[in-house]
Image 1: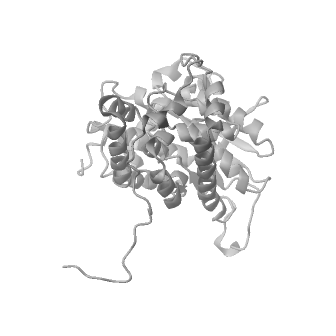
Image 2: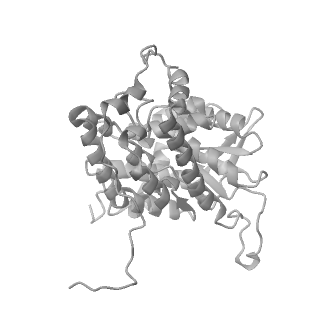
Image 3: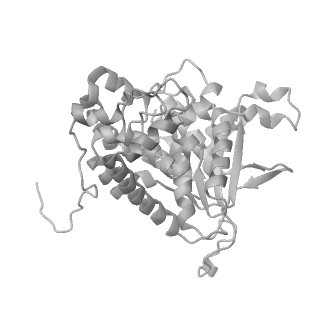
Length: 385
């Protein structure tokens, strides 16, 4: 039965995925015989040259505009009062002086661009929490005294997070950036997974769901430390809104599977997989992540999944979003890398993709032989699995 109604919902994504393929002429813009792509700093020469190409210059500017508006909506449209100061009987209060906004922050490309854009739209005296999560095995902590325990949490994301903090302090010096180090032991992980997290993850029940869901839950809780040159202070983030960079990899070819598909089937293979990625992101990611964040009294917001951002990126030809002929750390998410370079985040612009389960080292705590698509035995007590 088919019912016509003026009240039916319309698809908010105005543009389908652009399936046009590049011509030889289009790809000539990437030809720079004098550049050595084995050089780790080649991006310092490559990115300015690409930004001088008119089509890239215009596309990056348009991307900056649409992504900035997406971040602005998510940053401005909430009461700028932290958890600790919020009082429903005092709803007229507009700003409490504490951090009401946080960013799930690995220091990688997606999170640092979002943090930099968020700086544009908040009051100068409003702090932003950069929440960085790391995991360590119990045996890594056994022989360390209290002053040395933090060294066990020096994960890849912790290093890139600290470097990202320095970059943001340089590019946005007037902002107070609270770099929150959330350190989770194997014992703490096992306890909270059993008591809380596994129930939030259902019906998601793969190894990948377990790793990502646990990492995001602890990050959203925001219980950690802030370290300065003088001292180390316990801190619990009072942020009520958490910006998350999900959606960039799916739309801009950030995963290794995109490069594998390109190597096997060329540009046409990448175009097809991008459409599939976007179609399934709701069922694969959004429900799981929203539940784990919301359990901590925090609202997750996703600028890269703003309807206007998705429509814009759908309309952009694939070779302007990525070029997987270029090396890792340059070719994937090329459009976002160029935007980061334009914003002054030059070091972060060439960081290779590192998934949160590896960057935070939660994957090392578990069985290293597991595959992300395997059913997770740690969640198997749930009937749904």
